[in-house]
Structure formats: structure tokens, C-alpha cells
Length: 595
Ligand SMILES: Nc1ncnc2c1ncn2[C@@H]1O[C@H](COP(=O)(O)OP(=O)(O)OP(=O)(O)O)[C@@H](O)[C@H]1O
Image (cartoon, rainbow, N blue to C red; front, side, top):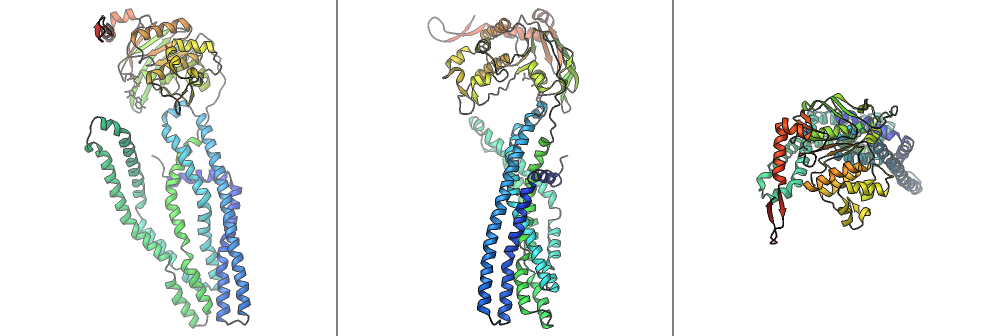
């Protein structure tokens, strides 16, 4: 279970703030001086009242000098607060930049399997939003909350200096206010937690609703389809109503009590005045100062309410900051040719077994086709090879060395994966192609593009290889992106290439040309081709059939055709579909032909 934000966010926040402790301390020191200057006018007022009540002889002169001091105090307060904010903002932005740098560097060194487990949306939220919240706490709240805490403290000292009994009368409401807030706010922490969960549920339902709106409209779904969101909204409304009913009276009482100390000061003051224990000016001063002295605590209390949300965000930074960079280890010298072996490899998602004790051997330069129904575990196999997932048991060996002992760089130098989900970076086609092989020559690039059947595509692009893709660039279709990804994997100069459904968009004829091209141009590479059909791969060295995470059969096209019912069925189906072609009959009207 996740720990509450209150418990764990603070140490992270303090650690982050500690990076600029010198500047922050200076900001707080300036704040303290500013608070003193803020209270100085009250002392001046006290002197003025005293002078009036005692009918001082040099009243005009005294007033003039007090007015001068008042102006000095005001100017000093403004300057000091300005400087305090300046330094707190400087510290905050340095902390912000430092934290983001640290997070990005931690993420750059994060193990692939960890990145795979943590959705990029959540990581983006941490690096952008959660860190931004730290800025607000450090630049504004540090100064404001420190001032709000210090001010009542200094006033208390001043009141005790005036008269200890009046000071105690001014503070009498504090225990009452604390008692009231404790009574009214008890049991609300569970409700706040529930509030956070409900708000998160509402937020995900809203995102889902907005994201699916076009599809819903396409299928002419009426408003009944939006029941989930309506239900979440109703839950949120009920919770907020309940929370408001519980907390508002407590908050109102707390606020009123903090300003109600005059009710205690006046009777105590009159009693002491009648007994000639205090002067009138002292009572007036305590009433003026006492009535507002506790108000800043409202700011402190609001801060502690709001900080929970910030701490919850900061808590998300901790796992990233705690990431230990992958141990580089001793570089393993793996000589080519390489043999890849799966030795009793199993993988589970939670309790669900996806791959069960897979034993496979891929010899150097061989072509293997991995077939199987949807959900059989084929892509999981590719992800294990790409380092995105780690086996729960068993080993993946390259020339006898376990893949798990290799660093990311070493693994990436041996295995390239073109997965179903193609990611193209913002930049040109050539930048994307050179990702795994920055120094690839023009000839190598042209060969890879040719093998990936992407020559026509490149020729059709406005700036050829220099055409920009992704954000601000042109939009490529799914099939076009796949072909770029295949070329990128081929260029990566690895002895093993995994193509996960990478040729799904190619027609039968192009697929045949593609496989032929791989043999011709990359005779030494080992290919693992994950596919739904084996069309064009009758000459593969081995065809592996996976069903429900287990190897059902493994052999060549001819042996499987004789021995495996699934393969026979697939093959028959493929033969039937291949014999159909869309053609243009001699009379010119298009139509389907049985060839
Ligand atoms: N992140 C995940 N969490 C839980 N289960 C998952 C996750 N990713 C995949 N699975 C499940 O693992 C099983 C195997 O998925 P995999 O993608 O390997 O199948 P596949 O054979 O490649 O299917 P397809 O041919 O449709 O791509 C599926 O049942 C899928 O639902």
C-alpha cells in the first residue's frame, strides 16, 4: 500500500530545498527583519497613544519624529520583503532546474524494464507539474508562512513586555481554537484521502470521455454511454457536499475564535486598570495588537491543508530520484557469430502466466518465424529481447552470456527490435534512421531503405531523407512508419534483429520481396520475425508456433505442414486468400478476380 503523502513528501521536499539552503536561509533572515519592521508601527503607535494620554508637552515634535520612524519602518519593510522574495524566487528556480536536471538524468539511466512499467504520462506529470509545485512552496510559501508564524510570536513577546496578564488574556483563545478545529476536523483525513481517490477517478473518466468522444459520435451513441462519467461526477458531488458540511462549521468556528481574543482582553484589562495595575495606553495597545495577532495563523493552517496535494506530487518524484543507475559491470566480449538461446524462459503479468518455460535456439544467420494466435505471447517474447521486460524465471543466453547481465548499451549493440508501436522522434527521416547507427553511410542507409521496401516512400516525400516527421513534420501512415522502423532496425548494425509484426502493412508480393531482400543484403544477421501468417517465409530456417504462452510446434514449413493442424489451417487459409487479387479486368472496370 502507498504511504500517505503527509508522511513521505516532507523529507523529499526538505532534501530538494536543502540544495539552496544558504540562499533560503538568507531569504528567511530578510523575512524576519521585514516582520520586525511590519510590527514597528505598532510600537510607534503605542508611543503616540502614550504621549496623547499623558498630554506630553512636546506633542507636535514627538509626533513628527514618530511619523519619520513610521515612514522608515514602512520603506524598510517593503525593501526587505522585496529582497526576501527575490532570494526565495532565485532559490526556487535553481532548485527547480536542478531537480529537473536530476530527474532527467535519472530517467536517462533508468533500466528499460522500469521505464516500461511506469507510464510516460505519469513521468511527464512528475518532471513538469510535480516539480512546478515545489517552486510555489519555496518561492512564495517559504516567505509567507515563515512571516505568518513569526509575526504572532513577536507580538506575543511584545504583549508579555507590556503586561503578562494581558498577554495571557490575548492568548486564551488559542487552546479553544485548537480544540474546536480538532473536534470538527477529526475523521476528515480519511475523507480527504477518499476525496483524492474520487477526484482521480473523475479525472480519468473525463479523459476517457473526451478521448472517446469522436468514436462514440461515429457510432451514434447517445448520452447513456456517458454513464460512467455521470456516476463519477455524482460520487464527487456527494463527497464534496459531505466534506463541506463537516468541515465548514469547524473552520468558521476556528476563524471566529482566532479573532475573538478581545472578549478576553477587555474584561481582564478593565479589571487591571481599576486595580491601577496597567495604564489605559497599555490596554489600547493590547486590544489593537491582540485582535489581529492570530489572524496570520489562518494562512499557516490553509498552507498545511494545501500542502498535502503538493506533497502527494513530490512523493511521485522519490522513486525517480531513488533509481540506482544500471551497473555498467565488466564489458562482456561477445564475438560474432552469435547464438541466441531461450532456456526455460517464463514470464508473468501479475499472477497471469504469459510465457511458460520457453526453450528455443536461434543459430547465427538463421531466419525464424514466430506464429500464433492473438494474445499468445509473441510480442512479450520480443519485449524480453528488447530489455523492456525481464523473465520471471529462466535465462536468455547470447553465446552463453545471460542477457540480464549485459548493460543496456551492450544489449542494444546485439539486438535491434522493430516493434508494433513505432515511435519516430521529432526530426528528419535521416535522424530517425541513424538513431542506432549515427555514422551509417549513405550506401548503408540506401540498402536498409531498399530492404525495408521504403524506396518509393522516400522518393515521394517532399524533402526525401531530410523530410521532417513527428511534431511539426509530415504525418506518415502506420505502414510507412513501420517501414522506417524496419530500416532503422536493420541499420542498427546488430547481429540479431527482431521484427514484431513489422510487415503487417505489406501486401503478399511486397512481403516476399522484403524477406528476399533480408537474405540478400543481411546474410549474417539472425532474424526473428513475429507474424500472424508465414506467407513468403516458406524457406525460413524454423517456424515456431506459440499458443497460450507455450510452444506448440517448431520445425520447417514442410515438416509443420505435415504434422501441425494449426499450421495446416493457417497455410490453407493463406493459400485461399492469396489466390484472390484485386485486379483491373480487360474491360477496364475494377473488381475481384479469382486467379
Ligand atoms: N502490460 C500488460 N499487462 C497485463 N497483461 C498484458 C500486458 N501486455 C500484454 N498483456 C497480455 O499478455 C498476453 C500476451 O500479449 P502479447 O502482446 O505478447 O500477445 P501477441 O501474441 O503478441 O498478440 P498479438 O498477435 O495480438 O500482438 C495478452 O493476453 C495480453 O493481454
